[in-house]
Image 1 (cartoon, rainbow, N blue to C red):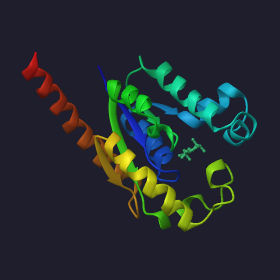
Image 2: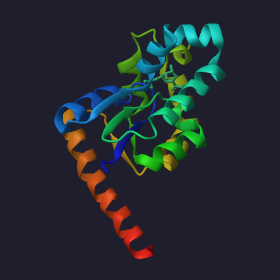
Image 3: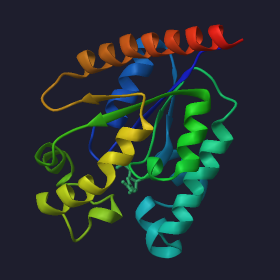
Length: 182
Ligand code: S3P
């Protein structure tokens, strides 16, 4: 079975860009969680947050991950908060490798400052807030992931290559471990 790749990390860490490139380069299927949820709900993430609340959005994320459980050979670009729930991480780890894309707060700010699509950053679009939220989330991303990849100042192709190389190693290790125990 072809294992899946789940990209987790802060808003603006590069998950969508890297997911798209991985799919182009390695012929995998792309799942963009935010887009899928928007299509399913027929409204934007901002409207889901303002009309139905964050808790409702978080439950949609878990439901979507459950729906994807049987799929293979996909790259999932996860919403930045998806890895905050233990149950979501457990679902991801069952079918794939979990990769934490990281970037410095300054880099994140530069990437997200002109967008108004992220309700959590509306009214807090500054480096200090990004730093604070990132400090809270970083340990969870780190714990959830098989490995982390820094994205600051790097080109997309290099990042994808690193992910594919390390994912193969990780997959091999998983096989070896199960080979010993069976
Ligand atoms: C969120 C990240 C967003 C989106 C929502 C909440 C978060 O996705 O799911 O605005 O909690 O970090 P991106 O990480 O793709 O921006």
